[in-house]
Length: 159
Image (cartoon, rainbow, N blue to C red):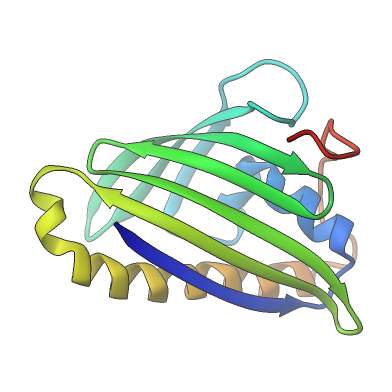
């Protein structure tokens, strides 16, 4: 199993950052490797919401299904991502700080098959990739006067 962790401060209110990140359909706006995301479950964003996504890496595309497994607006968001090559589970936390929002991420990655041999490489690449993605989110949200965010269904602890 591979662990990937990090944090970033985003100069936006915590509820804005949370709502924007909770709607996975927003990721292609700040992550150029995320080609397409669609919500595949019915209803508003909330616990159990599922998304189908396509990402590219090294010239190849990969499909994934992402499910929100815990949602405590605007404090904590957890998800499980299923891909043919690996499973990822993680949590994002959002804390109000004087400079905006401190967002922390913590992921566990479990490669399948031959990818198990690449754990050290996956750890290094994953750490770098997550830092790049969330730095792009920071840049994107801080450049927006009013970022397009869709509210989540859950207003309080759900799990």
